[in-house]
Length: 360
Image 1 (cartoon, rainbow, N blue to C red):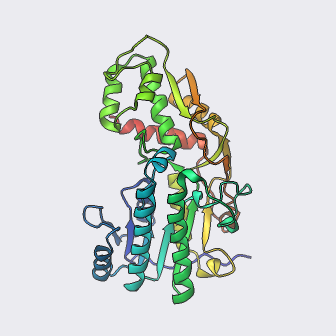
Image 2 (image 1 turned 90 degrees about the vertical axis):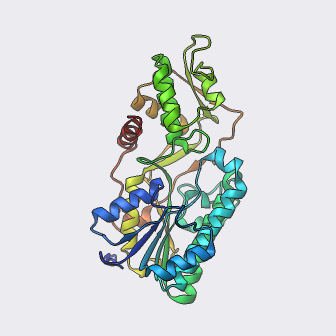
Image 3 (image 1 turned 120 degrees about the vertical axis):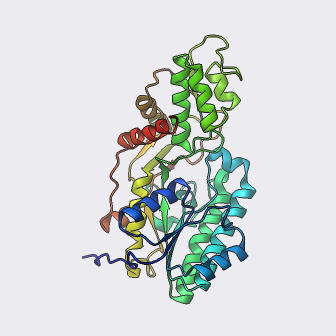
């Protein structure tokens, strides 16, 4: 029999959601509000730079925070991680060390730190259990980001052990959903696919005005994508050829995806767990995933179906595939009563509806 889940906070507690404008932070904020938590504190980067230790210290000293959800991070897909490794390790290390240490100095005893599935070894046995952390080399393309996230987990563990606080972490799989970034240079797999397939559908319909509007709202369209769409820099057809959707790699790697609202529900759920679930020798963190993975090619076909594009998908095998498979073992969390609500197909429809709504 598992111990009954009891909240370690009440609805009057003052909760700081760091990173509330990001996709994950915004979803957690919505879930907390729906659960009746009304005393929630947020700050934009303009008003609080969490990479600045003094500013972070003053914030915690002045605000009387009871609990922290640390969802703030510099994030991006494989291309962004590969292009900006210094920024990814520096900024994420600074955010983790400043928030965790300064929150503790100010008397905060409850922190939920959000990590990432990339903390695990590149060739970890599948599905990936929490115990596999630090048992092998990381995937090189996102190693700097992963190292920063591992440091955050270990900070939480060290403060728990030395000071008796209740800092815990969750490791989400690949997330998608409302509020995602559709920047084709820095976005993750699913949002990049949604936008590319949508643009390809518009190009096949010769809706040049809609493509221009898309670029104004969601950002520049890279040259390789324009070429695959048979478009010049003015979004006009070059050869009147059928548009294709370019994707990195071979399409064979397997990935697990989770709707961000399911992740947010898991976070609020984990915040309410008693400390005994995270006491040694158990890991101080929990995997959060759907438990189902798909090849990139299968995922692309499903996105194409949802978007309504019936043309060709062009895989660029000169580009890296990344980790061959990343499937999380979320049995610990499932045994405690949590499970995802969205199937991948339904989640993609929800995400695409949000994508279209932002174009209106």
